[in-house]
Length: 162
Image 1 (cartoon, rainbow, N blue to C red):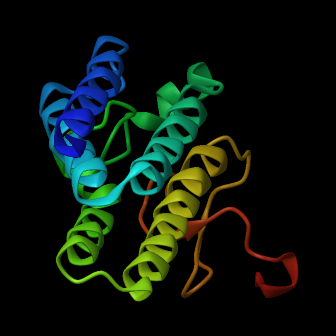
Image 2 (spheres, rainbow, N blue to C red; image 1 turned 30 degrees about the vertical axis):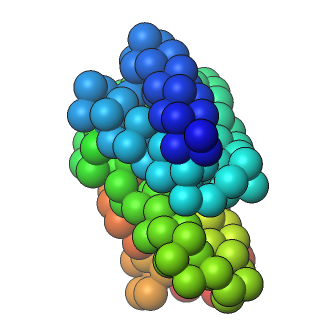
């Protein structure tokens, strides 16, 4: 029954996101598969954590979208998430969820929390950082990067910047 509930809930969320153009068709299909697994192999905790990430990240993507549109042209990916982006953000969590289903142990849950914190912070930093008036800097070399480049940060402490 959990698998059916997961499929129905995931279809409703992904379908609404597709209708709002937050997901492409491939992203919608990947989200349905992923959400079904998160609920079916996991439970409401796993599914709810994924849902919380998706809703907050979607809202941040839409926040001041008019200012982000020009910058988005130079980004490798845009605000409409495709299957690759869905898997990049939720795929590792999905495999951890399946691991927990096959061999229940708290370590799977702790790893999942860490993974979801990581993808959430990365996504939020991109969405908020893209509104910065200063260009991003490399987290490794502190050199100025073009907006949208991987490895950049707008939030490096001023005393670390050259």
